[in-house]
Image 1 (tube, rainbow over the protein chains, first blue to last red):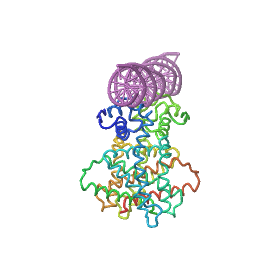
Image 2 (cartoon, rainbow over the protein chains, first blue to last red):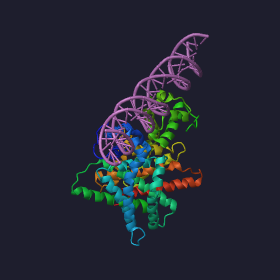
Image 3 (cartoon, rainbow over the protein chains, first blue to last red):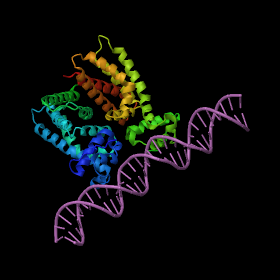
Image 4 (tube, chains in turn red, cyan, green, brown):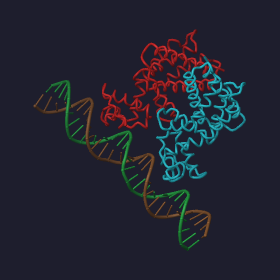
Length: 208
Length: 208
DNA sequence: GGCCAGTTCAAACGATCGTTTGAGCATACG
DNA sequence: CGTATGCTCAAACGATCGTTTGAACTGGCC
């Protein structure tokens, strides 16, 4: 059903690329290693040889993208955090823009959908892995949100952050479906999208 | 791992109840018919006897809740749609309040999480089923949203509706996790939650 | 009682899953 | 050249999946 041999890069990279596509399309359980290795053009046993198990492969798919994504987010946050003239918009831009760049990249456009799938699964070991490895990022952003919104109680703030980040993840997971020409209007549209999302998030966090 | 025999109601109802719980916890693929029938306290073959197949069972889990949910939504919408003094808040309340009631019910609290899972899966036959059977509900709400927000272009309106409904589904899917006492403060809190969600949605739809 | 439709049951079916195995191939180093 | 090392390969492993089967059990009706 899904051959489509990918024949660029090393075996590990081909597996990671095919895994990202199939995990986004069919979920972590739904995508089998046989579909995956066939699509990548590698042998079935290559997954267990290079990654140890399917679960470790899933973690590696996340690690490859989230390391870069969260590094960008923290770098952007560091430029504005703690300063007197920083606005809530600035903090949200530091959170949203790196993810938006990733979701518009050719190779990483499907990853946000993978992330949205993980976001919808409330009970798994995957959430523990994400929390253990990338929880500090959300913790830093939460601290800055609390500084920008001192009138909110802690539970109220957490609740709103969860609501807004859930909406943003859901929104950006749909961007991979639309193929857009790489011309001038594409960058214009991306900037409009960024500003829409940021204003949406500002409203969702601070409206009452 | 998950015995917990449910011994109330008919076989069909026990299966539907256990299916809702396990689909919410482990997803449609992750929950096997053997786990499901063991938890329901019925024989393995009962699913195929009463529903025909696992896919039909999934559809029936949705149908049982969505028939009531969407009937409530349409009834609430009918009271406010097309009238001159209707506000965007009224329309959103007609959409949000029935779902909020369902998510706070004892038996249906997990269904919103099942719905959130289906929301995150962008490519399946399940979306076709939901669109074919309940698409008219969202179409009626969209028409009323368009009447309330005439300044928005069609693509812009659809995009915002998708963003807001995604956030709302995500938000309400988390409510089942918190067990609350059935006292006076519970109804107070639910009313606060409803107003928060409605104002969040108003802001998300109309903020710019 | 005898019969019958509706339901439940244990058991098995073939298919597919993740994982393991051991031989085979390539390249580099002594 | 011989051999070690890193990798790929076809084949098989046991487990679990959704589904089917045919017998056993249930209640009501003649």
